[in-house]
Amino acid sequence: MLFNSIAFFAFIGIFLPVYFFLKGKPRLWLCLLGSYFFYSCWDYRFLSLILISTLIDYTVGLMLGAESDKKRRKRLLVISLIVNLGFLAFFKYCNFFVESFQDLVLSLGMTPSFNTLHIILPVGISFYTFQSMSYTIDVYYKKIPVEPDFLKFATFISFFPQLVAGPIVRAKEFLPQFSMDKKFDWNRFNSGTGQMVWGFFKKIVVADSLAPFIDQCFAAPETFSSLHLMVGVIFYSFQIYCDFSGYSDIAIGLARTMGFDFPDNFKTPYFSTGFSEFWQRWHITLSSWFKDYVYIPLGGSRNGTFNTYKNTMLTNLLSGFWHGASWVFVFWGFLHGIYIIIQRLIGPHFGRFMDTIRVPKMGKAAINIFLVYTATCFAWIFFRSSGFGNALEVITGIGKFENFTFGSIVNKFWFVKGVLVIGLLLTVEIADLKFNFSHLVRNQPIFRVVSFATILMLIAFFGTFGSNAFIYFVF
Image 1: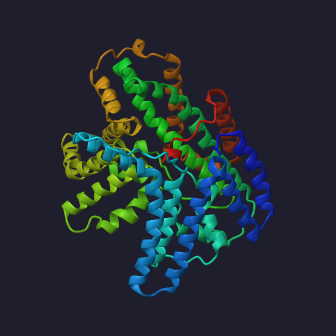
Image 2: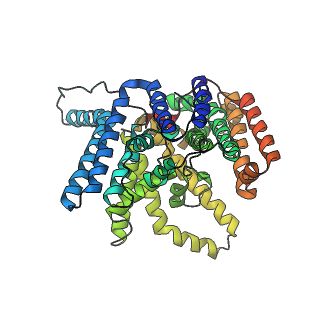
Image 3: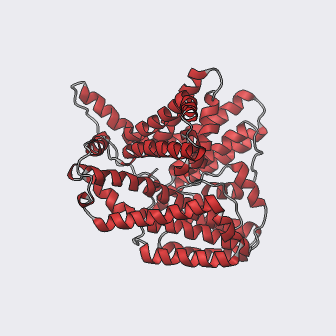
């Protein structure tokens, strides 16, 4: 079930009144069964994967809570990791490894005698797997108490607002919230609905309006001018941002109307002045997950500069691999690892150079933002491309620097609409940064009514409707 579909609004129209009518365990049962129904609208068969992960991690958690022997506790954790990562590896990466091995065999002059399997990728498996794993890891390290209530734990794993595309909510943040009955609160309802509306604006008005231009560019890059391809890459940077952050806004806003608090997942990432800052603003819950469960256990920034860079690169490579079973995603992660390492190597020298030539503070920020955004866009080419050949065609096409005239843009309507909706987005984000506009909307009824009405009008006027799936559903 898509957030941007009639079915979702019908579901919410029934679910929310019943949710606030019920209390205690009946309300939790409604959340659990509603979440299972929500997920089964894609493919009911994959509910079994969620149920198996839930049962195993719940059982492992109970056994960890009762076990004091270090070796036995470690075995229990390993069981949880094998099951969760095993499902993820089979459904998401099995064909990737088979195809990579086939390519290796062919490169050696031999003919492979096996084929890939017809495996369907379960929606959201990367998200709920990481969420479930964080619970058992935290229980193992005694950072959180064991959750004895199976109903609460199962609802935590499958809670439908963020089940299929995040944000990834940790057990220590989410499970305690199930112990409190949520009363209907107009302030929460208004602010949550406002964030949902803004999320729909990002998805329907910005992301879906940019999609036709971008799809055209990457489908046949050799047929377009350098300017056309460059615009396509810039448009994609905003499509991926608005598509994913739009989903996060809808999920966070919906949870808030129900009385739950989720962490922010995006904070205007394209205004970052450094690559480390970018990952503190982009997909924040995944970045913090990799930091806490991969980077720090590897050693983090301890044990010298070389190990710091090694751990940085490994974490970014795994992050790229998490995003998709393809070498272009791994390379995308590699690029971001390189960016962070280069920033740490030359960043201080570059800062001193700008001080020497007396670049003002605002100028420094603008230069850094431009450099970070440009490098990020270059990496997005690989993220969006179907393969390295496709990416190189786009890069080569831009690198020719041919025909930088407005007439070389094939579809003027898509271009003008794209520039206009991106301009609207940036206007709101800059206003929020400068004047804390979102605070006024939350706390001033007049601002709230005007902003809601304006955004709804913009959605109606500029929206591209068609229930397009969210990009991160395939990750």
